[in-house]
Image 1: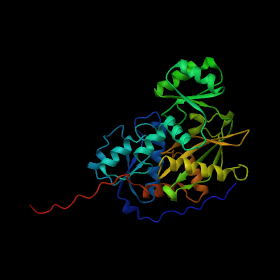
Image 2 (image 1 turned 135 degrees about the horizontal axis):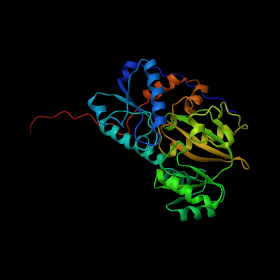
Image 3 (image 1 turned 60 degrees about the vertical axis):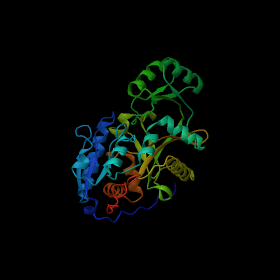
Length: 334
């Protein structure tokens, strides 16, 4: 176990942050979780004295953010149409600084296939995979990758549409379930071992990996129910990994974060092979959950930031990828 970084709350005047929209809900399959995250963030910001308001893009046009004078946006949206670069692009055009990664990093990180291609090209370890477009291709992937195999939508989160396939005859149903959520389907080699996750705060060289969390789910099944609604899942933080492993995972996650150009915050999920103790990157979440069961607040608390201080820090770091230049003063007639 490595020493946790000590994070100090930011010194910021909440009034200086202006009128803040907490974006929550939205159109994705993770709407329910997003509403829980957004509700928690909204309450925390208000406790800190921020002029914060709920804003659901599924119920109101996004352009109302500009017409109603919002100065910043805290993105508590999860999944597509919120975490995939689309909302980030709209906020860029409106000139409203927002939390989390920019357009490109958000878009790439949402696509697990593209993320894995980049990580593999950069020499970062990730389980072998196949992208498939039919039952037959899923069966061929099973033959190549072996059992068990994970089949999941390439652009969803919260384990929605995911199946652990242990026999070839399960491939058809697994493919149909994943394809119901996304036409882009990923088949991934299963890594048996310890499941861990590691948040990151900050940007560029100043980014910091927070304490690693060891996840111990009932029966080893960290599914939607066990993520958000069960009290039976154990979260060990500070983690109980052997000496040196936590630091190695933190360094790997920082490299994965910086390689994709992430900023603000994110959380990467990692599997540690039980036989070799080698860590493998699964995916990275650029708008992590902020519910009562969520992992970033757990890790941040160990590092010295409680939930309210974490929300305020993330909001204070809100930024634009490409701020529009101030209009040039008009010169005289020539």
